Image (tube, rainbow, N blue to C red):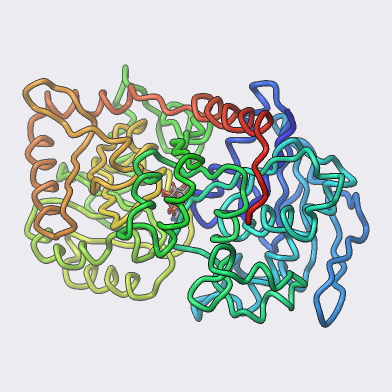
Amino acid sequence: MHVLFAASECVPFSKTGGLADVVGSLPRALASLGHQATVYLPLYRQTQLQAARTVIASVTVPYDDQYRFCSVVDGGKLNGVQYYFIDYPPFYDRDALYGTALGDYHDNAERFALFCRAVLEASKILGVPDIFHCHDWQTALIPVLLRSLYADDPAFAHSGTVFTIHNIGYQGVFSPDTLPLLMLPWDLFTISKLEFYGKVNFLKGALVFADAVTTVSRRYALEIQTAEYGFGLEGVLHSRAGSVHGILNGVDYDEWSPASDRFLTAHYTPQSLKGKQLCRRDLLQAFGFDKETTAPIVGIVSRFAAQKGFDLIALAADRMAHLDLRVCVLGSGDKTYEELFRRLARQYPARFAARFGYDNEMAHKIEAGADFFLMPSRYEPCGLNQIYSLKYGTVPIVRATGGLDDTIEPYDERTGKGTGFKFHPYTPEALLDSVQAALATFAKPKSWRKLMLNGMARDFRWTVAAREYVKVYEKLRSTRRAPVA
Ligand code: ADP
Ligand code: GLC
């Protein structure tokens, strides 16, 4: 089976969050199962290619006021996966992927619509797949285009579409003028299609038109069908409940394993944990703490976004500062949270230290050097950092939501079972209770070791998830959907 992935980011070419990790690993896992996998990405300023070759000199994308001409670059094959890049410098040769500190780029609808059309056009020349697997709102127009402008195109008569929601909080909502600008028919602008409170909603379009919808954990698949988590799209999802699948993300252990991680000062395994002590010291030093301290280290690596629960940390911080711990934070994004951690580091320099910006090396050092990893998310579709943490013997403290709930089992002192600490109510008190329970276990070396080893023994490799995706793809090949009324 040939699966074409269309996405806005992918390791090792471009990344802002976990989407890039997933698009970097799943195609590879499919290739290792014997399938053909092709990935299409925008060619951003940050994309580094070893040997690039233009394979299509010009693809025409019409807008109502002009034609735009982009090209397609062959990025070569890596681990059995073919990479192509849509090159259109006016749209992609910019400082960031989606926007700046001032907000999203004003032309994001046009930027990603161009990408979607270019992928379809390029595939006609480079290979039409059995399945178009699209990810998040940036690629949501692909299933829409295939059921509207391209509905009668014989080239795609046998292609199915799978759309994966990595985060329903980002939907691609634009003014209605976007439709004529992108040459999309007005009949898409109805409540049963792309219209959303008087605007055009790309993500909604994909949820309506894709043959199958998946999301990145079972729990999140259920949550997004409720008003609390659906961001207004719960009704659409509910109406497609039979075709919404929750498939938990996997982990690329070639990248994220303390036994081989290229960014660490020392390596370690469940059999020999000594290296973790060295990673601990390295981390303490990097954050300006006394490197000999035995006080527990809490790590945080995150996009600074409301989703991640920083308002809870803000409310709990003064009380956390009275506990004997060291908090090492790495993050970038919303300035409010950057300001929060700057203030905490000033106010409690013996407790909080923070670094700002995107720093992959430091993300690895935190995974290895910390004792706990804190993710108090308000919502979390899957979450990868807590899964990485397990392998590094860094015990997760999480809020029981989405993928955090699916991947972390609460530690039970009596049975010695479990992998972390979990709290339910979204309150600073519940967070503090969990932190205190974690500290109490940390103080008992035998229990602590057992807890670390439980997590390190967990296995979330990608082949399991890849097989589940294959089942979804195969089901589509045998059942084509009826047209949307
Ligand atoms: P999300 O996709 O919502 O940001 P995930 O937990 O799925 O959350 O994935 C986050 C990914 O991004 C992880 O690989 C994490 O290490 C990485 N990451 C997040 N913030 C940073 C940062 N400031 N520097 C380096 N890596 C980061
Ligand atoms: C999103 C989610 C995160 C998930 C990632 C990869 O960015 O916020 O929870 O792990 O996508 O699927």
